Image (tube, rainbow, N blue to C red):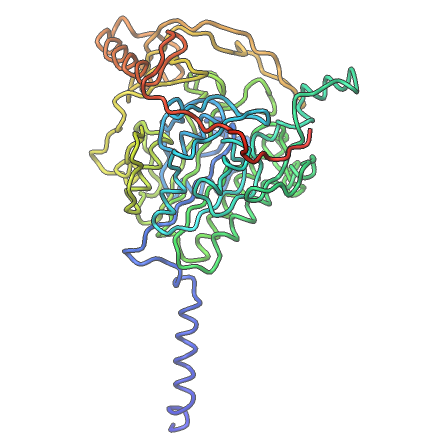
Length: 500
C-alpha cells in the first residue's frame, strides 16, 4: 500500500490530468470565451436543392443532420442574384450597391473590394480570432484585393468563378469551329495567400477542389490553438462547370448535379465532425447558405428554386432567396424553422454583437439577428424595407410580407427546361410590370395584389425612393449620394501574373 501511495497513485493522477488536457473537452470554450464562426457559402445553389428545403432526388444526410440540430431559415436572402455583388454584401454587412460592387468580376477587372471597407474577417481579427478562407473569393484577383489583405490569415482558392477559364463553353464552341479563334479568358489559377501556386487549373484539378478545400478547412479547425476561429468556406460548386471527385461521381444516380451536391453535403459533414472532434459544438456557430439561386439556363447541370420564381440573374425570389441552415448546439433551438425575413448582410453585425466587437465607423445595412437565430418568441425582422438591386437597377423592394416589383426587363427560360451536357440554353427577355406580391401567401409571385393594398404600395414606393436617392438606380437614372467607391488598381500596384 505504501508503494502504491508513493509511486502508483501520483502516476495515476498525472495520467488522469494529462488525459483531461488532451481530451476534446479541453477545446470546448468556457462561458466567457467568444464563439467560433463558420460560414459555408455555396455557389449557385437553388432553394430546393437540398433535402431540408424539399429535394428528394438524392440524399443530403449531413445537411439533414444540421437542420435537425439547428434552425432552417426559409426567408433568407442575399443582396443580389450574382456572385461578386452577393459576396461583397455578405462580408461587409452592406448592400453591394453601397460599396460599388455589382455583377461578377473577372480576370480583366481592375476593381475589387475597397481597403476602407471592413470585412467580417477583420471584425473577428479585432477580437483575436484566427481567420481563413478556402474556396472562391471573387472580390478582385489582384493582390491588393485578395483575402489576406482584408482580414484573413490564410487563403487558398480561386480568385473568381470556375467557368472563367479557356474551357468555358463559349470558348470551346469557338475553338471547335476555328482552333485559332481568340478567347476571352485567361488560365484559371489557384492562389495561396497572394501567390499563384497553379497557373493553369485543369479538369482533374476541379474534380478535387471540394475535397481539397474541405481538407484544409478541417485542418484549420483542428489546429492546436486556444484562439477562437472564423472559417469561411465558399465552395466553387455547384457553379458550372460541374465536377465531382471519383468518390462521388455517379453516386447520386441523378446525374452529375446530384453527385456534386452530395459531395458538398459530405463537406458539411466533415466540418461538423471536426467541430465535434475538438469538443466545440456548443461554442461554434455554423451557417450554411448560397450566393444566389440556380443558373437555370444550364438545365440538367443546374439546380431548382421550386416553388420560387425564376433563378440566378433576376431579383424574383428564385434569384436571391437561399436555402439557409444555422447550427449552434445549446443556443440555436434544434429542429426549428424561422420564416421571418433576414439576409446575409445581417451576419457581420450579428457576429460583431456575439463576440463583443465594434462595428465599422461607416454606415452598414445589416442588423443583429440573434433574436431570430435563438428563436425568441417576440423576434421580428429588422428590415422595414429591403431593396432588390441587380445590374445597378432597383428592380424591386420588399418588407416582411410584401414585395413591390418595378417595371424592368429580365431574362427567363419562359417555361423551358434549359440546356444539356453542361451547355446552356438561350434565355429570352421579358418585361416585368409594376406589381405587388403577397409573399406570405404567394411565394411564387404569380398574382398582383396592388389593388387590394394601395397603402402598402405607397409605403414601399416611398421607401424605394429613399434608396434611389441614397444608392442610385439605373432604371430611373438616379445617382446615389451614399455610394462608396470600389477599390481600384492604381499605377504601381502589383498585378497577379495571369497566363493568357
